[in-house]
Image (tube, rainbow, N blue to C red):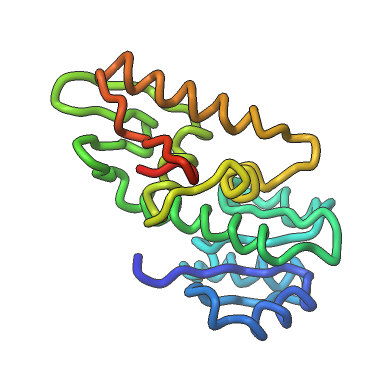
Length: 198
């Protein structure tokens, strides 16, 4: 799975903006002016489109009612205009997850994560993870530098004004505690002065 694809359905202006800045991302973009065209493309079993991340406008019931759409590939745009930075971050997180789901199992440090069962294990023990915990681990694994609470708030939680920073800190604290209790590991997620790092 070397090529990654994003399909934009009925938001041509977003397609135009992304084409302008395509040098900042590595995925290929498909543009569909209407849902009918997109679903017809799906029906021809075009695998690139079928496996793409699908960006759509709120209340697109025609798209949502399709049985061939994987709901995990959907990104809904509630308001237009929308902020491009958080949107690209959300797309990138979904693409990371798709890449690792394709691989099914992922090795991080001394652990193996089975992304289908959401279980992380080492040679001694196993631990069940939540979807949010998987998101945090995958995001931190992709970053070379420590990530601040604001980075995690913006990119994992897709930033909400009513999300307090302690929500992020609580999730990280609980995840680190799980690793301490199950694996006797205080160093899987490092809490550094300028953020968190794997």
